[in-house]
Amino acid sequence: MSLRKPGDGGGGSARRAGSPEEARELPECAPGGRLMPLLPWDRFSAWLHCVCVVGFDLELGQAVEVIHPQHAKLTDKEKTNICYLSFPDSNSGCLGDTQFCFRFRQSSSRKLSWHCLLDQFDRDLPIYLKKDPAYYYGYVYFRQVQDKTLKRGYFQKSLVLISKLPYSHIFHTVLGKIAPEYFEKNEPFLEAACSDIDRWPPPVPGKTLHLPIMGIVMKVRIPTCHDNPGTTQVLQSTQQADTQVSIALPTVHEVDLFRCFLPVFFHIQMLWELVLLGEPLVVMAPSPSESSETVLALVSCISPLKYYSDFRPYFTIHDSEFKEYTTRTQTPPSVILGVTNPFFAKTLQHWPHIIRIGDIKLSGEVPKQVKVKKLKNLKTLDSKPGVYTSYKSYLNRDEEIIKQLQKGVQQKRPGEAQSIILRRYFLELTQSFIIPLERYVASLMPLQKSISPWKSPPQLKPFNQEEFMKTLEKAGPQLTSRLKGDWIGLYRHFLKSYNFDGWFRTRRKEMTQKLEALHLEALCNEDLLFWSQKHTEVETVDLVLKLKDKVADGENLPVKPGTVEKLQMHIDSIILALPEDLQGILIKTGST
Image (tube, rainbow, N blue to C red; front, side, top):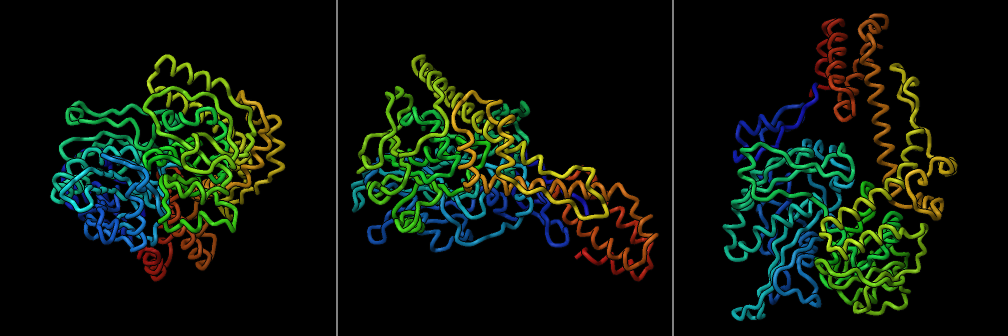
């Protein structure tokens, strides 16, 4: 058994899926390690689950009119969620074209025909871009225009891309290119657009990808877990390929951070704390585009940490989790909700932290300094913009970042530059917070010399909260951050949060896999054939079976190149030294 590498996938080739060339480029793991060619719609499925068209029916209300490709499966519950989440609330008054996104729970698990390769790509992504098996994203292009030929007097329709991938910038760009034409040309145009997507290379992190869509080509690069946080790699490709490129996307997922935080400008540091701690947060906005962008901005502000709780960029009273998230019989859950319906101002009055934003302006002036408002003052969605909470920040406010961004507004610094400054500020703040935790967790790793090939890999030491707190005196965030305040209190609160639980479970899994990888490498460096010759046949057979299990596990471990192949050679040499009857049995074992 050998390690299989995914295909390059970096070109914008127009070869149809399923051709022999494609099969060679992208081998797919089947039972027994056989290679299977790509099927039609496999490439499409690597990016999207399906495309839906949601219209308004006078008798039924919102209804899914089209699902493409036709074989894509959605449960009735998923269809209902898509219907209600694809239209703005009636109070939003969204005339013209509106783009936004939503997120909803997947009702049943499904495996793609080449899921093993997609899992490999997922492993190479930064933690905050990994797909969540329990959720779908919906990317919406909604149009509402007057049409006197219709009974209702308005044309209302949404084109919706359903995907596992959190690549909001890519999919909103795609919608911006295909939706306006679709509303004019209907089904044949949509089928042609989907066929284009089925020619896309797979979403391989770190590669420059050329994605053709209806006569233009998008050039993108998906980040990898090996990139330095906060850096954007300049897209590079050949001169020949560049002549085809119409749009080069600088990001696959980032939103305009400064524009989103402008309405609550003076509270950015407190909002960072609330998101870090997984506190229940609701964003009340005038439209789905503002609510969804603000929620995505909040979730991204603790990057490179992943936000492990649930978040809903656009949430309605028809959502299947409405009762679960709005009940007063229990404390509000750790979730960030984006809402536009005035009904929520009353329904969510018991929530501890509410952000009220007005219309987000493209540039605008920085609002005058406002105090945090008391929750009892929030009665309707028409209340003044601001943050309504009784929360007291652990850290003192950083006046430097406020002054820097204010100066940028006065000097008419471009919004993109303001967002870069703000994103760097959040990144440095998060890294100052997480480095002491990373340092302590690394100390839980057993020494490499304690790893013996003839014993099970050693266990990680348990996380001891008080032991960690003691390390902060000399190696705390004060080494990298100028901010003063109650850092100890912030850590104690964080250690009780979903974000810590998710972060530590992920780190523990990575470190356990590292120990198993080191154990595997230690086994490879032993003379296993010599060992087998000194032991009984029963012990040798037992060793071979254990080594076969190690080979199977090794494909998912961070081992040095060639380690698994080397171990397989050890197995083969041991089997060949055994009697023929045993050889036949052991060769068959684990090969089916």
